[in-house]
Image 1 (cartoon, rainbow, N blue to C red):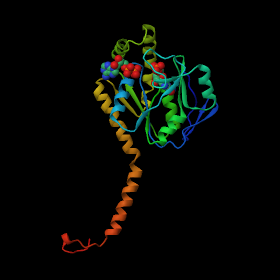
Image 2 (image 1 turned 90 degrees about the vertical axis):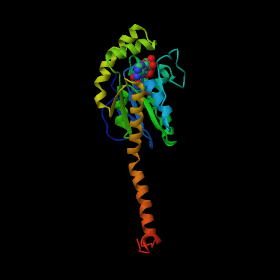
Image 3 (image 1 turned 180 degrees about the horizontal axis):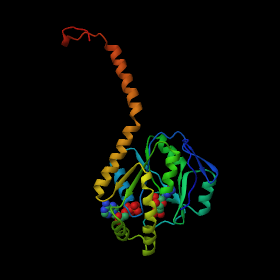
Length: 246
Ligand code: ADP
Ligand code: 5GP
């Protein structure tokens, strides 16, 4: 694991190995960061939640990892060479990036800013380092950690998924322990035992966080309209009250 910097509280700024990185410009939407040990069911969950909620978009990361057989360029990831990735790091294109088991992964800023301006909330699928970084840089971020029901269940899911060699599965299981230790930093933890229940819990969290984030604007508009109505109607005589002014 490669740690990228120290804590900085100011929205939109961070430190990456002594070099300044800018955060998101005018980010208005919410950013939901989802992490889980590989094989937990995160991809399955995210697809289902996106089908059930409007105005939610998935952020496609850049990676130096080669594509797997079932992956598509521009849908699962943007697959780039180490040199291209480094160029993006140097030009400050990333909101965050991290090295995960020998490959580099990064979240580009520009598409996030565009989506936020178009009114979307964004789902980020990040490892624990990336999640920590986004939390430091973006105030409107919500961190959600997905847990497998148990060690045995995770091992079984990795085997059943049939994508990885035994060696890769071993390294994923070894890696999971360190990731679990980071879960307490997250705002929410969900156990993906029943897929349906986990999808509903994740959906509810997103709905509740949206509701919370809109509280100030809602009350401002609501109270403004209330005052206007009160002012216009004060002292009005209604036939229903026998002409008494209200
Ligand atoms: P991740 O994206 O976290 O690596 P995947 O979405 O690829 O994980 O899921 C890993 C495997 O577990 C897949 O075969 C998927 O169908 C299965 N899976 C996902 N959620 C559940 C669940 N709640 N119960 C049983 N199997 C599940
Ligand atoms: P995989 O190679 O299995 O697709 O992903 C490996 C890990 O990289 C997962 O934990 C995934 O969440 C994480 N990851 C994917 N994209 C990004 C990214 O842009 N930034 C960070 N920090 N992690 C990412």
